[in-house]
Structure formats: structure tokens, C-alpha cells
Amino acid sequence: MNFAFRKMARQLVRQVALTTTVLAVTAMASGCVTLQSASLTQVPAKREKKITADSTRYIFFLLNFDNDYVDKVRDDLIRKCPNGKVSGILTKDEAVVYFPLIVHGRRLHAEGYCEQNGKA
Image 1 (cartoon, rainbow, N blue to C red):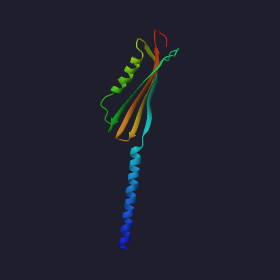
Image 2 (image 1 turned 90 degrees about the vertical axis):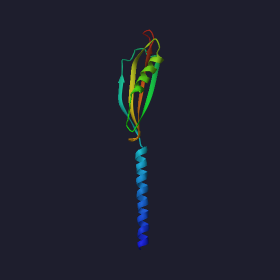
Image 3 (image 1 turned 180 degrees about the horizontal axis):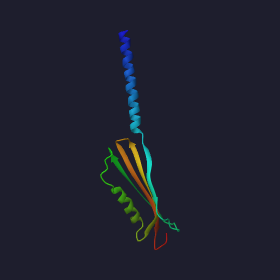
Image 4 (image 1 turned 90 degrees about the horizontal axis):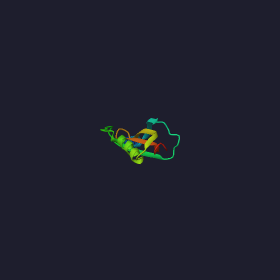
């Protein structure tokens, strides 16, 4: 009887360990995306040349040391509209959780219209 009890106890420990491991992996592998902010500037009446820019920043262990990814979006919009003016800019800032407490990310998307000499 003692042997049977030990065998059942080992099986129970294995099942609990397996269940705990599966739950932990599932929790760590689950992610989500939330929209942190959105903004829109005045949209021009004539909207012909649409331009977009995106940037992503990966953050490990919740440690973010700079926000240079934001400057990349601005520079991309300016580069795509040389000698013109960008207006009607819609920006979306998203927070992405890939693996909770380990890997997070920020995604910034901007789109607008390039106006050349007052014309979109």
C-alpha cells in the first residue's frame, strides 16, 4: 500500500508541475496591443498625395532609455514631402506587450498629406 501511495503522489506532483508549466508559458506568451493616443491636425480640402511613416521601439524588462523612434517618424514625413508642407497628420501611438514584463514595444504610425505650393 505504501508503494501505491508513493506512485499516486508522484503522478499528482507531475500533473501539478505540468499544469503549472503550461499556465506559466501561456501567460508569458500572451500579448496585447492598446492604443495610447491618437491625434489629428487640420485636414486639407484637396487630399491627393498621402504619405505615411512608421517606427517601432522594442523595450526589454520595461527599461526604455530614449524616444528617438519618434524623431524617425517626423524625419520620414519630411523626407517624403521635400519642398512642401505636411498637413492633415494622423498619429497613432500603440503600446504592445509581447511577453509580459520581458518584452514590450511602442509603435508609432503617422500619415498625412503632402501639399506642394499650396496644393495637396
